Image (cartoon, rainbow, N blue to C red; front, side):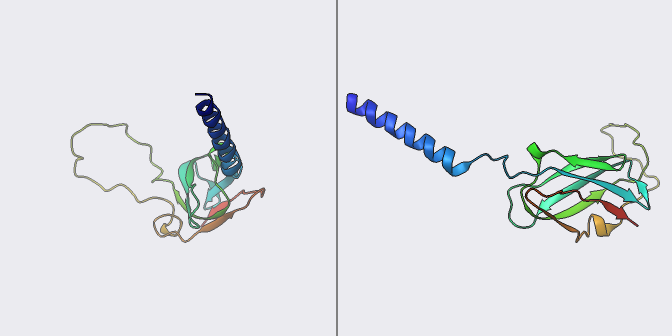
Length: 142
């Protein structure tokens, strides 16, 4: 019985050491991401920015744009690497708040997203997140 206890205790100790030394703090490499988004020189009042990993990183995230500014805090941040950026800002019209289950009525089509496709559906915008870098990415969309 004593041998079993010694074996089990040793096994648990070795497993704990391997876990602590091999994995490290998953938050350690995450970086805070901040920036500003302007459309035709004016702050985007309300929108969304997304960062999709291109180098096989395990992180990708986005943030809401409010009054031209966005922030992904460190605890949700991105690990170093390259990311494809997409930005959406809707059509600028406030929603009606109609959550009816009825199908939409025929009528005028809602305007397209105000952000040009080169920054969202056809984006080829790439930003590189650096370890310990500033990681402030501003966008001035014409």
